[in-house]
Image (cartoon, rainbow, N blue to C red; front, side, top):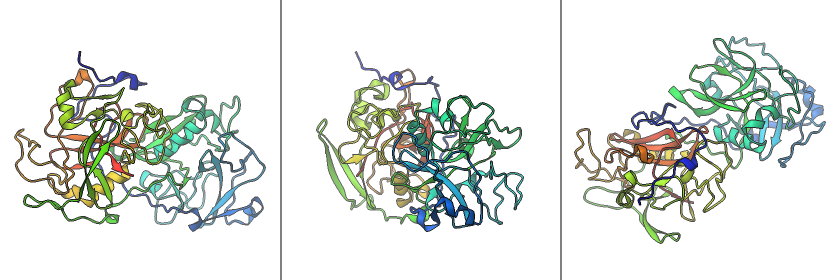
Length: 481
């Protein structure tokens, strides 16, 4: 009997069937991810100072009933020592706290300048010392000091898992005072989340809500919500509200998403007459399959889709092994990440509807010495081959892709040797009538919420980065370490 794709074991939530044309209810239309304006070093704009020098700063710090000493331990520790840094842009001092492997601001950001309207009901010389300022999404993207950045989902996810998961994070991260419900231990990590809510029509101050750097529906930014005695939530800010900002310090895990101006465009290495691309061969020791590889700029990519079976969340179109031989296996995001830990511990437990911690470069189900590409690596490749302006994709394998009338295109497309195959999107067996020939998708290791992750989506026009339900099946192209 034919083996069916076992998607249900990967799922912790309720599966919602979506048509491929829509891709997701999370606004998965293609978009270019904007560059983050932050550097890798806090020392360039900030100065660590002792508690005795706070009073000498040009801006005072709001008093708190407790403060936390820096520690690399996951166990919360408290101390009478106040740790602060100075934002050199305006001289303001901010408390900060180390939680696990991360360093977070322990109070909300209060930066502004005269050229930008940073806060709701903006008053230049007055800001609520408990709330500080509320930021509009694009202002929030560039609001953090050098050496710090607006948190992404992966930053909040790491924070949540460090303090015990979404059920406990809302209680343990909120401040001792200011909340209407103060039962039990709170703020044992020194994060001091206050119920600032957000500023928009009908907004209320019963939650701590922070802006993130990840895009949701209609180009808005997700928010991270903590509420008294409830699990933390990840919300779509499609209403366009102003929110508070907590910056997190850059570390070895943080990777800047490139801008097109930062990536040199490459001349095509292949024409219909000549092929001067730099190819190689990869042998996967797990099943002895060999794959063609290609060098694009400074990156080395698999030039074929992975064809490795996986115990859960992997399968073929219509459960047809011939389609896997031609296009490769389709994987849920969890399977692509190797959430079962079959090959590494990089992303154990990173399921299709969960918060998780993981390595910076996730091996996933890739062969040893290779890893699942992240958003920055895919975006770098797309800029290098000028894909956005390619007209009909510089990455497509020739003589396979169909046009609108579903006839195979005869024009040459494969200018960089990437040879992208039109394998469609592999859906669970009950929705297995997906046609091949006009689209495909490749998973990244970059998720933007418990339910959604980025993928490379290629259609009849070009390839670009978009978002999709983690439950859907996409293909895998590995990149060399």
